[in-house]
Image (cartoon, rainbow, N blue to C red; front, side, top):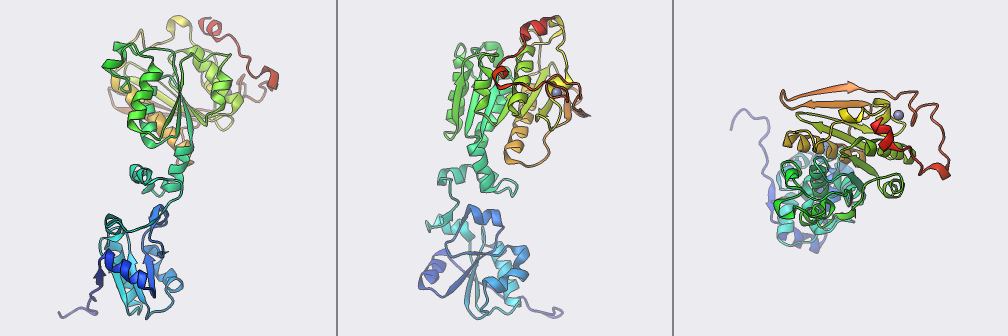
Length: 386
Ligand SMILES: [Zn+2]
């Protein structure tokens, strides 16, 4: 063909079993042309990582001899083909691309060096996570080692628990003293019709275990109170607040600030929802926003008021999103931000919220709590009905 300055050279493509044979015979340089997180997940034993974007800079170090037999592979065979073309242009004389990449290699039952700490089942289950550079195998292992406590297995806790379980949060604690009621099923999707009457923690455990055997469920069939809260919270990294009453919310706030545990807090009512993430001393706490609870007769409760079922899913999943970011240490959690969702107009509004210097719990003049007083809290039932 006329006009081209350079005729595109044909690259030799070889099948995985041919590559395996050549590797066994020796004298081959094997180049992995993928991204570092993919390499980390699984690679061929002798593969040297040279990401596509760094080929020009790094290939000389990985493959110093331009006349040596060099085999390239990637995930499915496209990137390695392109890289082989580039190498040929750089003067490499004997390059081949492995057709079908590491996927075809594995399909043929050939061995790979896989990320430590994850079983083959886990590598498969979490592959859509580990493919994300922001998560990777390292991030997935963080999730598998994380301990998250759900306060309430109701509207918010149900969807949050399902997605956190699916994401591979290794330990999920669930505090709830209720049993499944038929009126819960319109929004509490972790429960089902057959389980009406069953304790919610037990019903949630059944659903989670069926979804993901990697998750260890710890049931607390109780109501959080001043006598048990520190002991329960202590073991967990992040807390999801789906409490349906103010005494529990205030108690949870005060205890979590003392223990410096982050709390992802949300609430829903009719068509409205709100969510914020409280990281003690980094942003405001619940009390900075709501110094005192509303009078009891004005305190909304889902049992007495209506709520659109999907509100629970929407806000509960936003909570799960916050938890994953906190555990992974990525993104921007809702610290110092209150996000409001209005379902009828499908509108999100974000409000900046600040620490209150006069906050009785996290403010500058808040009293230091001695160890002996750590488990002593005000009587929130009284406080809330004032
Ligand atoms: Zn505060």
